[in-house]
Image 1 (cartoon, one colour):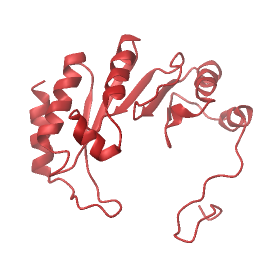
Image 2: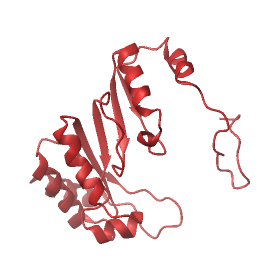
Image 3: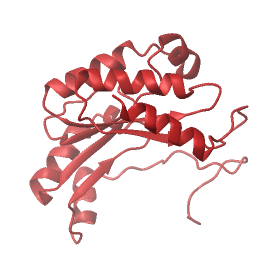
Image 4: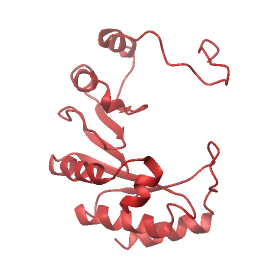
Length: 182
């Protein structure tokens, strides 16, 4: 909005003040909440995450959903669903894309499943990089855990100074059709 402080490049600066948990709950009080999605800058890493999720359950009785890259999971006692962003199954591709191995992410996906959490997995199709064959490997891996876990394929969209292009409708359909076989 107009009151957001921006740096010389026009990017929003990090906040300088934070709301207390009580302030957040007071702001949410007039709302009827059915589901709250906790996301942004890896929300699960916030030391207050477990208390925020618990407060949302206790005060509003709503479902809580954590969007996560899965590298580090918080206490999930009051988290109803996790939406895991799986970049790649091929570890060398994951390391090239994120700078980190995917080993912990894949282990955490299995851990969350065994904790009985509802899961969704999403991956981004990037033609020529995280291509249809890699999307197939992700779908196969997710199905090996439980083939009823929803798997969403998102199209890459141009951001930053990257050489990749957005997938065509035909490429998205091919990736979806292949994934459905698992």
